[in-house]
Amino acid sequence: MTQVLGNLNLSLNQLQNHVVHKGTVFPTSPTPVQGQLFFRTDENKLYFYTGSTWTAVGTGAGGLGKYVASFTSQTSVTVTHNLNDSNPVVEIYDNNAQQIDADSVIVTNANVVTLTFNVATTGFCIVHAGVGIATGVTAYYTQGFISQTSVAVPHALNQKYVAVKVYDSGDSEIEPATVVLTDANNLTVTFGSSTTGTIVVVGGSTGGTAVTGIQILASDPGSPTTGQVWFNSTDSQFKGYNGTSIVILG
Image (cartoon, rainbow, N blue to C red; front, side, top):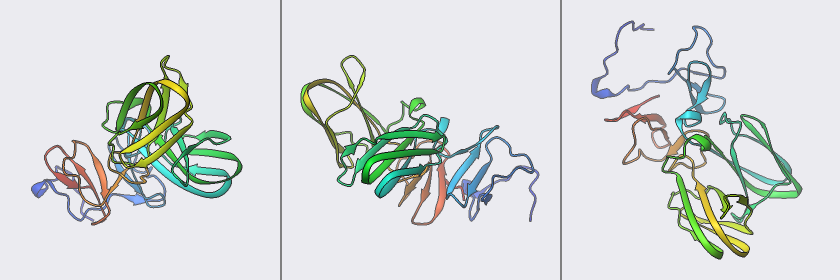
């Protein structure tokens, strides 16, 4: 092992063939420092140390995180999303991609949500974290509507599995009759009677698919933003954008 005590100068700003410190338990000795990275091999997730706690990349103050879990013919579903958010947005859909309600949705803790149904149900659950502090991100779409029973929503977020909230003209949250996820860029909301209000669509990490706190992409994004981190499933590398170039994280 080579110990580097000074600055490490990287040619072409690329840390090649580097693997982030990894294991099944967060390191405690030596004491972790703010900004330190650690990859949990039991969760397949990359974490950073805030100075007081380990947080999954893509959650908390770093932006939106999203986790998708499917379930088949169950009356009780435990969803371990590991997004470290005690106030997540939880949406449930049946296997026809139509929004449904559970008998109860309990936020067991910051990393677990428990769903219960009156009858055995098949579908999928989407958990969004960091929504309350990341309203400025691009994966967020709002559309107003006036006196309609059916509203087509072309959110163009390039994600089929999104969270949908509906508010009436008095800004009170209401339940529509149906929410159908048409495709990755469109959905339809219907009401039992003519309704006026606003539809809010939250998409999580834009461009990702079924992620657990970090984007999983088949190729590097064409126009990344500074600080963006993702996992390239083609070359199996964690990567990030430093504002000038794409670098390999591990």
